[in-house]
Image (cartoon, rainbow over all chains, first blue to last red; front, side, top):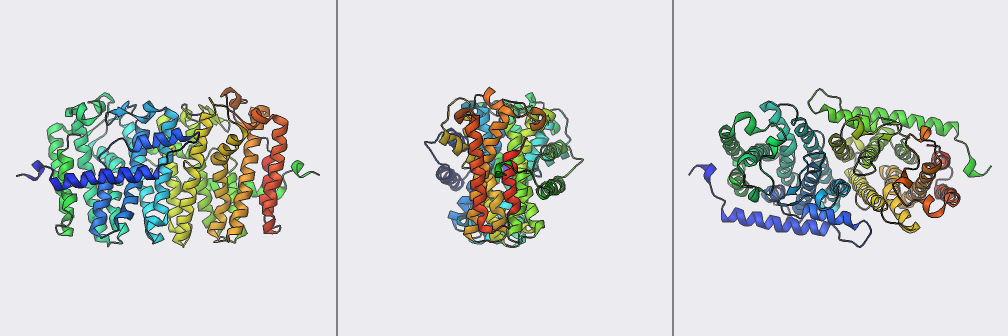
Amino acid sequence: MAPSLRETSPELKEALEDTVQMVDKAIARLLPEGELAESTLYDAMRYGTLSGGKRLRPFMVMQSAKLFNVDPSRAKRVASAIELIHAYSLIHDDLPAMDNSDLRRGKPTVHRAYDEATAILAGDGLQSMAFQILAAPETHEDPYVRCALVASLADASGLHGMVGGQMLDLIGETTEFDLGTISRMQRMKTGKLMAFSCEAGAILGKAGDQYRRALTSYAYDLGLAFQVTDDILDVEGNSNETGKPANQDEKAGKSTFVSTMGKDQAKQRAEMLVDQAVRHLHIFEGRAKMLEELAYYVLNRRA
Amino acid sequence: MAPSLRETSPELKEALEDTVQMVDKAIARLLPEGELAESTLYDAMRYGTLSGGKRLRPFMVMQSAKLFNVDPSRAKRVASAIELIHAYSLIHDDLPAMDNSDLRRGKPTVHRAYDEATAILAGDGLQSMAFQILAAPETHEDPYVRCALVASLADASGLHGMVGGQMLDLIGETTEFDLGTISRMQRMKTGKLMAFSCEAGAILGKAGDQYRRALTSYAYDLGLAFQVTDDILDVEGNSNETGKPANQDEKAGKSTFVSTMGKDQAKQRAEMLVDQAVRHLHIFEGRAKMLEELAYYVLNRRA
């Protein structure tokens, strides 16, 4: 059977479900419920972080940490911090001035469920909280490790990463991008945070450079495959499954892998990227099976 | 002459001007100019951070660092990080969904000079950058110190600090607050970041708890005095001097110190707070003269 046709194994399914539960619990503990006047803000933060999601990034953290025998209670904190950053970016991306999305995972987006001001502040607060978690001694006893985590997450989130990529994405609505710019945009927008998610385990485990490089290379290829399949799902996905309206990209006039190379070539590209991603994991000699399977899962997902 | 009537000394004036120049240079170096497609984002970040401002927080960092003989090149990095957080909060606060301000320091706000999406992303990127600066080895050789800086800034910026205070501020547009809630709101919105600005010097200098406490107590009192004078300037200030339209608070229906206690009592309160702030500095036995003078400067400012 061709690798690209692999079905999700029961082990991967279980590990993914475990991560969802674990990260939901961890985030719920981090975000207070309160009786204060400003508790609407906390509610919005909980709503924006606990309304589903595949928790792929936390899964990457947990699995990469496992490769270096990192205490899961520490990895969990890093996994939560990354998910808070991811959630904040979705909340801001959905705003009327940005992608103007009313639905996310089949539910009203934060600015629809609350209001725009609350959504802006909820995103801002989630970003601060992510760094606060990483800097705390509970995340790792070695402050060098904590500083490395803060520095890498900040880099992945900022103008050379997620925020810069999102800016490119908006520019792409009025400017036609070539394939190189689309790839660069996606690497910044999605790739860098995924790369950090995989690298985080190696940072926590003080692993050698060759392992860090293998994990980040895996993540960049997988991240790109993820975006290519995202573009494919946008044109052929079922909005009941994806939880968002179909053909959003085309309506927004965005340059995507599909609009640039066509659907068939995009599918081939995604398969090639996934095969390449998996090859980077060979250094772990079969111990990174869950990350391998994750790559095929990303390729075959329907949502 | 009563302390509240003190004029700004030539020394303070010079020190403030030096800080403005120093922080402008430092931020300009931190924020790249680029030829990339997304360089509009960099431009907006520069515009939002380099369009004037009194740089009170950087001044507090530099002066508190001086008390503990901290290398100014390190203090400068922390001063810049705090100013980036302050600038991001102003950019987001000015957005149409928040305070809906067209002018800031007499110039179009970031979302007016660029657009809303760019303003949201510029703010987001500035926040990430602030933490990246603090986590970098150039800020301090001791990673414990760097982690302490990240943790404190994240706390001061987040839902228990600036972001939570801003949420309260928005709620205050439709809910009448008592004096206690207004004070709590201002402590979160302005006080915490000022407290961190003053504490930062002590953290960088690994100073004892009694000095940290003295500096944060000074900053909280001064921060509150700053807000009371802000409310007073809103009703009696000259928009040519303040750079923003008059009576914004009243128009927005906000509960302020002036609306709650009246202008005369508010003035008395500000004077009392400044006197109290200065008393916290007695532990430095006259070495914190610039911070003392800053307190009177805040009280007497016209903008």
